[in-house]
Image (cartoon, rainbow, N blue to C red; front, side):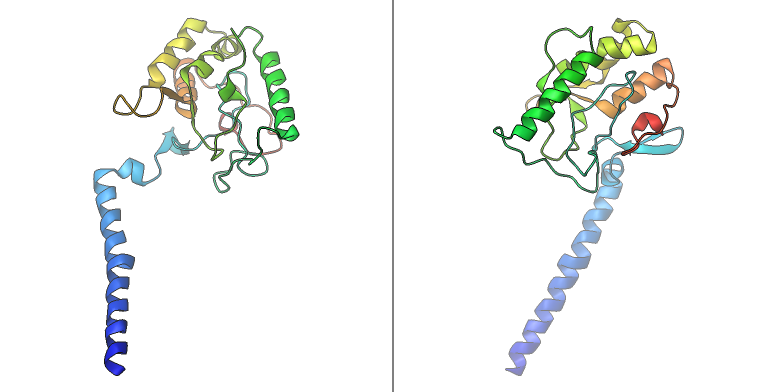
Length: 208
């Protein structure tokens, strides 16, 4: 009995050291050397300050910025500490009401947009933090952004085209545009917009 207990204790200690210390430290070290940007959260900086992560969506309310997909993460959305979907199904009246309200708002905010509202702009992702839009959903907002900034729509469209990523390895996923990086491109090209008055809810990127 004593021998069996000693063997079990030794195995426990060895397993803890290997899987609880050695392996995590080795993987962390490799990641920091080989992929430091990704290992540290794909953080995005502006003027030397961290303004977000390329992997996490933020709220943008100003008409001079591209808006991401809606979010159900946290009470006010876009809460990186509360990643979640709404869990509302297609028969949910609450979901239909929310989508209809978003469609009406987007149509009012984008009177010169061509075609119907892209579905991505009224449907949240499973995490509520998807930082990407499809190119069509970004193009749909070009007229509003250009008008708000007083620049040519073709210039804004050029930024969208330049920021569009293709399928991973040419096969996986769909073409996409990172909304945060695109909005930073807007500021770099045309200048930052005047800071709006603070409002209730999470602070959006243009309010920083």
